[in-house]
Length: 260
Image (cartoon, rainbow, N blue to C red; front, side, top):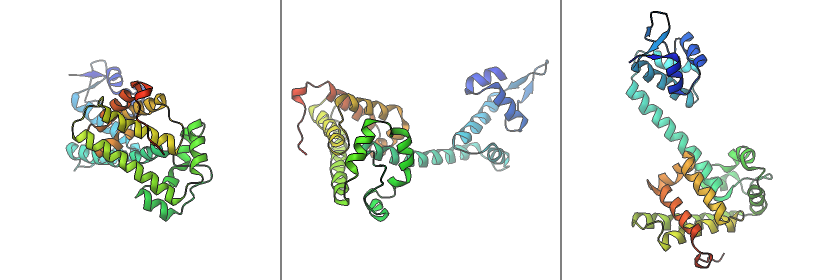
């Protein structure tokens, strides 16, 4: 089947001008022309365009993409596998960042009250200070960020260790219920969701049921959030968000009470 440049532009969600530019660079050329001289693209052409756009999404320059695709040893299947590895690595890094921000919004104007070695000891390979500027740009104008910054400014290493223990306990309880196939609407699942909410509320900023619901929606729509929970168990994200939703609908008098 032959596609016109306009049809390809609509399919790929790019402009016709972009496709013309790719053609000029020899990056994405039409395999045929109409009698009137218009560009016509085949299914194989579309497959090449997909490769180009994937590499662009991964941050490659057009020159780098041209070198990759012009390599005589280029194999599409191998390329897809390599691209998947790159995306998985990026998701793990972004998931670590966003999971940490979700748990504590762990940056502030004055910096951490810990050495870099202590931060690595608590958070493994993730360095919160490295991403402080990004967090400030994304959430610096919110009340939650300011309150979290105020509270965490005085936290010691022992405080962070205690938080991590509580967070790990909540995560373990979540996984145990999920593995036992406990429905999200079960009171035990709602209790775990409530504990997760109170963890945020207790350590970082007031987290109402409505705010927790908003956080849950982010878990579903943002793949970087989702990667954190899916790394724990595949399907855990949807289960947790369903439990958060059920907990939010639970009458106030039936909410689990957890003391700090």
